[in-house]
Amino acid sequence: MHHATKVVRSIQAMILSYIERDNVIVLAVNAANTDLANSDALALSRQIDPEGERTLAVLTKLDLMDQGTHARDILTGHDEVGRWVGGIE
Image 1 (cartoon, rainbow, N blue to C red):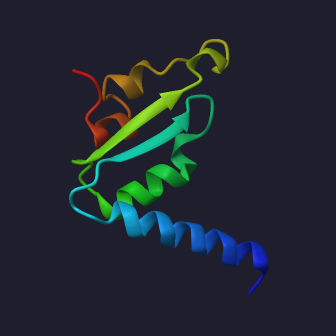
Image 2: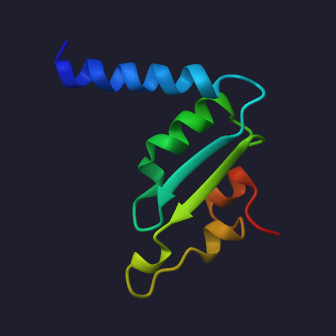
C-alpha cells in the first residue's frame, strides 16, 4: 500500500474513533466555494450519522463564492445537504 494511502486511512480511522461516539456532536466544516457533494467531512458524518441528528454543517468563506452563486438553498434546507442537516428554519 502506498504511504499516502496509509496516511489517509489512518486519519480517517482516527476521526471515526471520535465521531462514532453517540455523545459527540459532529462539526462538518466546509468552504462554501467547494463542491459539497465531494466533501470528506460530510461523507464521514453521513457514514456515522445518516439522519443528520448530531451533525452540524458549517459553511465558511461565503465571501469567496463565485459571482451569481449563493448558499441560500443549503442554509434554508432546500438543497440535499441542507435537508440532511436540517437547514435554518
